[in-house]
Length: 314
Ligand code: TMO
Image 1: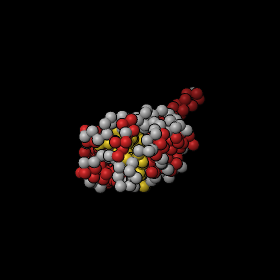
Image 2: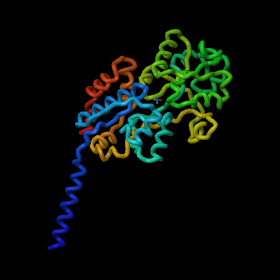
Image 3: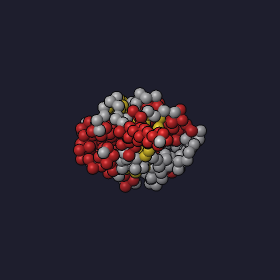
Image 4: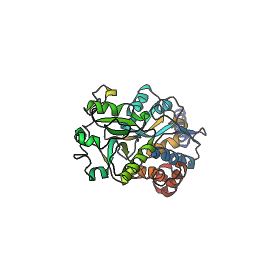
């Protein structure tokens, strides 16, 4: 009898504690979502924040440095990251995992590339014969068509802000033996890259810029230059000689290690969440092409795509 009672109480206790976990409500403490300096990321911040709010959660948005954010998540100042781009942020992400406190929360469906490239009209006009193969850049005739008033007679690569990946591109120009013909300038922000695309098209001139996919430019036809393939360790920052292109990469999510305990429902929804290239390109286009505010773009995307995200939150 005693045995049966203790068995029954064990069953009751474990049932209670199981349902206790399954039904645990999310903390009312705000989920802190970082915003960075490219628009798909900011719109997606509002999309995900809006999803969490429909689940009864509180949300806060903080502008954050896109490299330092992984340390901020690890120590709990920021709760999640929803666009961890392999090429640019993979190393900072892995450092935070290795130190402890940041969890890999899985991949988006979208595959990524973050690379130098040219608008399609540059290839169509034959401004630099042989593109997109990088060896076309070894031609002095090619390089001089990409000179700008600030490039000292060399062809110019317009790289993104230096906060994205520091000296990756200057190192590459050097390592590939292109430094006599090409020079790298850093844009102040993503908007300067898009302004350069518009200006070059209007003037009918060539331009080499840093860009990525998924992005709103996928729709226009942007051609990424094909550099020698990426291999682990090939970059200067990783001990290599720097003569390689960017990886065909993943796009991941990350969370602070306590998030699944403090906000089990939001954490479970965020684990399931996965966007396609088309969806991410669309989020960027709402701002970069349609000129909506990032907040309105987030709201519109949520309203237009209920069937997509409700399968994660419900
Ligand atoms: C991280 N980024 C998408 C700007 O390459």
